[in-house]
Image (cartoon, rainbow, N blue to C red; front, top):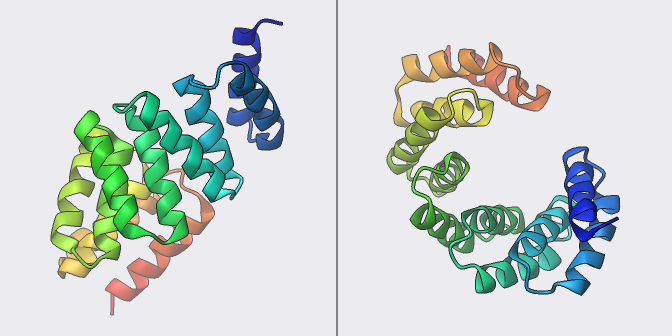
Length: 187
């Protein structure tokens, strides 16, 4: 098998959720090509998904040293910092992703979520609306919009968006949160 075949296999394993197997392929490929931004990004993302945040952050940081405009690495780094509870660094990395790609719907959604967690509902709504325009089928974005509208006191829009989540193929946990939001907004 060629390195490209092994990389393709690793990506398939990642997509299938077989993270430990993907990690083995990616680590071996990275030993052979330690400055490859695609390998650094995918292995960093793999570690983040495995819950090994420090290793993921280190690899994603190395990816950004090699490829500073790698917006997906910035998004992944922001997610890793969010998982660690470091909203300041998460916001910084996510903002860097938007500087590299202002229309990145995941970065827009994540910045909206960070701002919402910080209590800045108006700015959160701004970024979540932009994310929704780019990707209206993302239930997390729609839920974020519902929550931001709720925080802003726009109950009608909040209920509309909570219902939209329920009408989408969304993860069960998100559906449960949307049902709770609908109940709470009806009070």
